[in-house]
Picture (cartoon, helix red, strand yellow):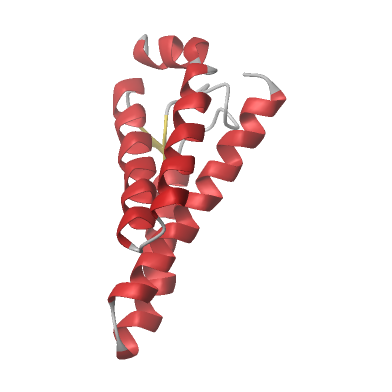
Amino acid sequence: MNQYNLLLRFLLEIAALFSIGMFAWTHFNGFLRYALVFILPALVMIVWGVFAVPGDPSRSGEAVVVISGFTRLMIEFIIFSAGFIAFFYSDFRVYSFIFLFFTVLHYLGSSDRIKWLLGQ
């Protein structure tokens, strides 16, 4: 994967975390609002970092919990979809479609990685 696509992926990950936290902020009140703003993105970060395919060229190659390539793609799909949905339902619809555009662009530029993951 080229460096620009890795940078795009990193920025998409950060945007997804931000949007999920923002969703918690805009949809909950009181103590739950403050707790979920930190807990939801933290859970997403844990899932993203722990479940991996050994030797993934877009990561360190190490995996705490080994999963199949298809499962990794599904985790990424769920997290990026959650980012899109969180932007959308937080009344940032324009940003949700910008996020979606760059997510699709990232995966179009990651065809080699997708083929590799599906072969694992």
